[in-house]
Image (tube, rainbow, N blue to C red):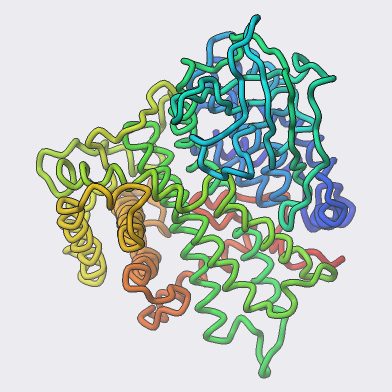
Length: 585
C-alpha cells in the first residue's frame, strides 16, 4: 500500500527538524554547502531498497503503479531535492529506456544493479547540441569486432560513480535521427586507458548532485550493447520520456510542499504592522494560491500517470503537457512565496536558510531532462489530427471510467504499450464536454468550465485550418502559444473530472475536501487567468471565502503533519506542527 510504504520511508528518514537527525534539514543544508550528497540519506535509501521502486515487479522490483512510484519519490524530494534527483530520479531516467526496449538479458542486468542499490547514469546530452538528439556526434560505429566508441558527453548525473551508463550514440553515418541508437554500457567493460572522466561540473542548484562528463577514444564494445533495434534510439527515448516527463514533475512537487511549510512558519511568527504576516490579505492570497497550484499540479500529474496505464496511446501528448505546465506552476508558486519572505529567502544561514536551497533546487525542473519548448515540439505535430478526429466528436474513443477514480487499482504498468503517436486518443480533451454539461447544476463552476469548452472549440477550428509548417519546429511564436493554451485546457479537464468523480462517491468513500467545489473554483480561476494572460497569483476575481477555505485546509494539514498534495498522507516523522522549529541553525 502507498500509505505504509511512504510512512515507512518517512519514519526511516526521521524528524527533519531534529538537529541530531543525520537526515534532518540541518545536515541537508550542511551537505549542500559542501556540494556533497547527503551520505546518511543515501544510506537510509539503501536500507529501504529505494532502487527497487524503479524495477518492474516482473524483474523482482516494486514498480507496479506509476502513482505509487511518484509519491515515494516526492517524499524524498520533500526532504532533500538533491537526494531525490541524485540517488533516485537519475537512475530512473536511465532505466526506463531498458524497460522500454532492452533485451531480457539487458533488463536483468539493470534490474540486478538497482536491486543492489547501485547507480545508473544516462548520457544523452552534448553541450554543442542541447536537446537536439538527432545531431548528437558521439559515435558507436561498427568495427572489426563490434562497436567502436568515440566522443564525449557532458552534464551527466552520477557518471563518475555509476556502474552502468545508457549512452545515446550515432551508430550510422546517414544524416537524421534513425542513425542513432542507445547503448547499455557497463563501465567495467570500458578500456580504462581509453576512457576519461573530466572534472566534476559545479551548478547553482542541486549542488550535491554529481554532474560530470565522459570522453572515450577508440573504445571497443560488443554489438549486443545496443538497446532494441539499431537506429531506433530516438524512438526509444521518446517512449521512455513519457514516463519521466510525468514522474519527475510529480516528484519535484515535494519541494513546494516543504516551501509552503517554511512560509507558514515564517508568516505565523513574523510580526508586521502590529499583526502576524499571515493575517495580511495579500499574504493569505499568495499562500492559498500556492496551495491551489500544488493541488492543480497533483491533479494533472496523477491523471497523467493513470493515463499511461489506461490509455497509453495518449501518453506522448499528456506527459509532454505535464512537463510543460507543472514545473512552471511550481516555480511560479515558490517565487510568490519567496516574495513573502523578502530578504530572508536568500540567506544561507539562520532559521530560514532552507528556503534558498529549495528555490535553487527547483529551477532544473523546467529545463532538466527536457525543456518546456521541447515538450511543445512533441505536442504540436499531433494536434491537427486530434482536432479533426477526436475533439468534440461523438465518435471519439471512449474515456475509461477508472481514469479519474484515483482510488481505483491499476494493473502493473506495461512499458511495451508506450507509443509515439496518439492515434486519435486524447482522453482529457474527450472528457471535457461531458463534465462541462454535468457542471450546469453548479452555476459558478459552470461559467468557469464553459470557458475551457469554448477554448477547445476555438483551438479545434484553429488546428483544422493550420498550415503544416505551423505544427513543426519552424512554427511561429503564435502557434507555440496556442499549444500552451491547449495544455491549460487539458489541466482544467483533469481537475474538473477528478472533482466530479469524487463528488459522485457516497458515504465513507468520499473525501470531503476533494468533493468540496471551493478548491476547484480557485484552481479553475487560476487556469482561466493563464488563458487571459493575467497573473494567476494576483487574480482579482478570487473569492475571499474560497481562499479562506484553502488556507484553513492548509493550516489544518500543517498542524496534523499531513502532506499538502491530494493524498494528505501523515508525515509522522515530522511530528505535530512540523515547521514550528523548522531549521533553527
